[in-house]
Length: 218
Image 1: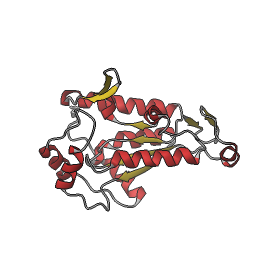
Image 2: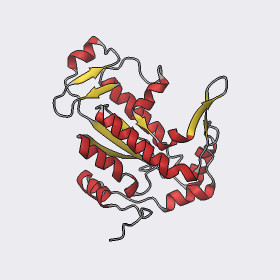
Image 3: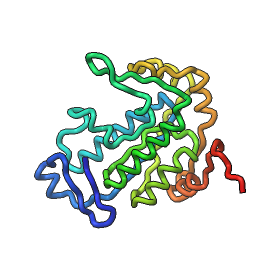
Image 4: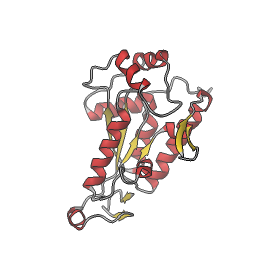
């Protein structure tokens, strides 16, 4: 993992970089990528590609292909809290429970804040984030801890239809991640657009309100 200083540019290596990478590495800016995209849109794959490029640029010789668990230090998904390892081969088994969704989202946000307090970079929030208010807690944490934010939308430019998404989801190898067609359709229908301008996008996210939050009686 890499830990970066917010302003000092100080970094700590837990894996040894190559001498060439070490000689050119001068900048440890903290960065948060917020992924968004309907299930089946390739969001997680895109997030892993971003992580591989980021780690390679920082001189990490042995990447996430050689050490798959390494990705979980940087990629923060609420789905992790629905998954467990079981069986002799420690295969991942995913069991979704709607009643735990709110709690697990909060756990993922807490995990993100701990990682930010440690200065780990880059961090990648790997959730669907179909609505702007779902990204707000992470953007607020980034501002609090000195991280720059980049929202990455896996839906753009693919021309994805409900039928294509159905086929992709059906082909997933992880047990328990089957998503009903009605749920996919609901995700598409609630998908909110985000301004292309980064400042306008951040402002829109920070103004977005959670419609399910309990209102405090004044």
